[in-house]
Image (cartoon, rainbow, N blue to C red; front, side, top):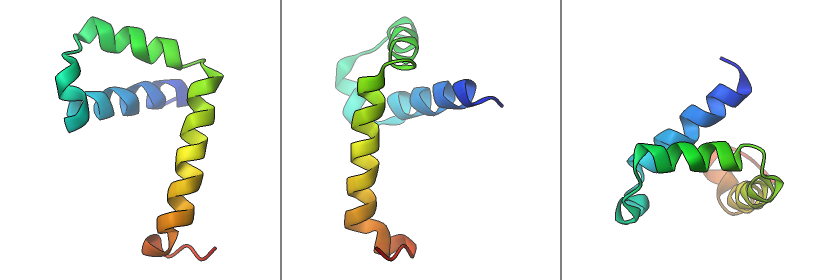
Length: 67
């Protein structure tokens, strides 16, 4: 699977299965628009990078990561 397809599958899974997304009432078309919109959105990746960095710093020890 290429990285773009993996990204699409991951984001779709998160949106369709995330409890915090239920109240948005997104249709399949809305989800597709979002996925293809953020796929090349550097701001999305910057925020995702920030989240991952902070999460690893805060909880990395839980996964055997020593920082």
